[in-house]
Amino acid sequence: MAQGFRSSRRAAAALLGCLLLWSCAGASPAGSPASTSSTSPATTVPTTPAPAAATTTSPTTTSTTTTSTTAAAVTTTAPPAPADTKVPPDPLSGEPVSVAPVFVRALPHDPRAFTQGLVLGDGVFYESTGLYGESTVRIVDPGTGHVIRSTSLEDGFFGEGLELVGDRLIQLTWREGTAFIWDAETLAPLGAFSYEGEGWGLCAQEDRLVMSDGSSRLTFRDRTTFEPVGGVEVLRSGEPVERINELECVEDLVYANVWQTEEIVVIDPGTGRVVGQIDASSLLDRLGSTDGIDVLNGIAYDPGDESFYLTGKLWPAVFQVRLTPEVATDH
Ligand SMILES: [Ca+2]
Image 1 (cartoon, rainbow, N blue to C red):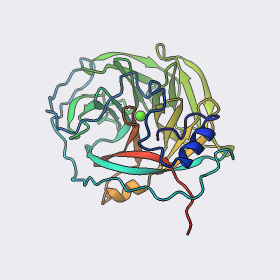
Image 2: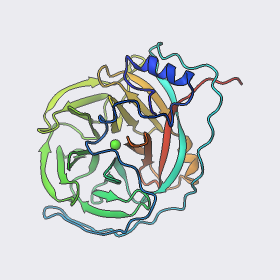
Image 3: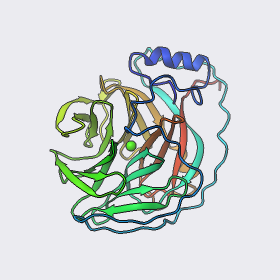
């Protein structure tokens, strides 16, 4: 959304103003697009197919090359018109604001990708996939779903959260205590960081990294050294939110999948408070069949048009959506 979750304390005025004016979606950017999930310039997902130039690079890992993926046919339709607003939620109550994903379009996605991390930058998706023996870091053409470049992790490493930091990718692993560093263009290995505990999700703010470990806690890390520099517990209405998974830093907020749910929570990392909650279960209906798929996981943000890209493990589609506050209606 464009303005709804500007910050924990400013959200109230911004969101209320946004609602009274009606839709936040499509509104012009409000000032500061820089503090996003990556340090790359704003990018817009291309609509024309790009050639799948398969290249593999990794002297220290077992590499595989993928030239294309089998993407399920998905139908793209225009987003629905917004409903009339009646009563805006009370952003001053301290309770999270409910947000609905407004469908924009569906894009193909490798149905064999056990998605653990998703990032948009430089006109491509960077994606981390998991499972032992199958984990990869990959560059994907958003328009076609084709895997442009892929590097496989060694069999003993289970890929997890991924973030673009400058011209490098940092990829977590689940229980291996290792964060791999990759050249974002070539996927050549540049080294690794070590850390304590499990690795689940990762995103970057301007001055720090934010990492989840499957608990209700977010750990902040130095962008250069990966050393922990703080942390916060995620609370909704005063209760811990466990199983925080894949992350996306958007301006000064953190969007997070909650494992084994179709919900995304929007967290103020300054306080840990959940300021928004997104029910993305409607996206499952658009998949047609849920046979063989796993949970919702994967959030990427495009600061260029302020839209979000959501997918899941083994999902055949990535959904471009806009996130707008739900409003009460007469029934
Ligand atoms: Ca992400």
